[in-house]
Image (cartoon, rainbow, N blue to C red; front, top):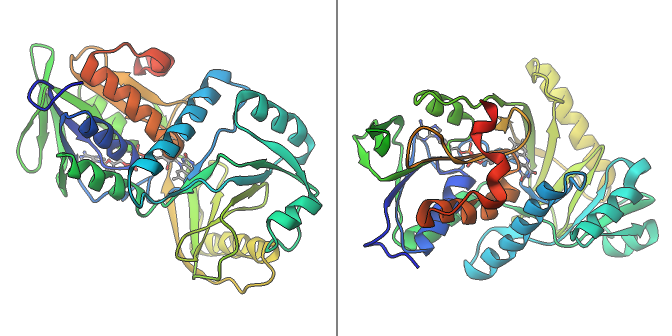
Length: 360
Ligand SMILES: Cc1cc2nc3c(=O)[nH]c(=O)nc-3n(C[C@H](O)[C@H](O)[C@H](O)COP(=O)(O)OP(=O)(O)OC[C@H]3O[C@@H](n4cnc5c(N)ncnc54)[C@H](O)[C@@H]3O)c2cc1C
């Protein structure tokens, strides 16, 4: 195990869920960590996320296994960090009814313990659902993280182990000498480090461009709505073609909707979408009046091919990257693997196929 006196100094750019989870994983191993963020934790994708922790792409077995492993690691983090705002209360999913049986089978065979449940069973499990579907996939290992609090909670746990957080400090460049990283330049002066990890979400391509590395990224928008608090309806998350919803600990419902990659449109169009989403939730939970409290539209950081961009950055020793969609699901496994690369000089291992070099 490395100790603070022998391990390199590490600077992490970004305190969203990826930077925060990595800071915790590194600090737990005794490393010297400084997290630099131009804002506050969760000011970007993490705070605007639907935050469903899931494994739902069985057609890509390796990627599916990675997500599944991360779900398991979330269980460990929940046990380890007191009050971590993560609830692994299970999910009920009835997207694409025509292929639901095949999906349930593939999920289960892949290790995401899932089974089909009938309407009668759903009524018993979820009495608040007014019109349950005929059949759904019950995925008991899945869950949610509170998007408002998760990054901060991980950073607090990291700080308790010695990690330093510098909020409100913008990184303006990576410093290097003879092809080796020496730290980062920031609006608050230089931060010296032998290893730098760029976990800046959708700002990552710009930072990497500064050292001549290409990371093409898509940034499709997603809408997240919060209702005012209502009495406890469920511990589960519900996802269907028409509905993405779960209830926060304080009683508010979180509702998610994407725009199919298109723009949000005018204010009137956005209001129309919001009314439609609330309307569907109201139909699902007919017993309680729902009122919109707040809504955000946030860009998702999605590397061009949809998969994470993570690992060593070629051409500059000591520079690493970790940016992706499904970062809420993937944060623990990414943190563990990147920490191992940074501290043990380990191979990319299960992350080998996700290196930025694939973009040429
Ligand atoms: C609407 C929506 C729904 C989603 N749903 C899910 C879901 O259900 N399940 C799931 O797993 N994932 C989901 N995601 C994806 C997930 O939220 C992201 O993958 C994840 O939050 C990315 O975290 P991050 O730490 O990489 O980036 P971010 O949270 O964006 O954090 C990046 C940080 O870097 C900082 N930064 C940027 N540039 C600089 C700089 N120059 N100097 C200093 N700091 C800088 C920013 O201030 C920010 O705090 C969703 C995302 C959205 C938007």
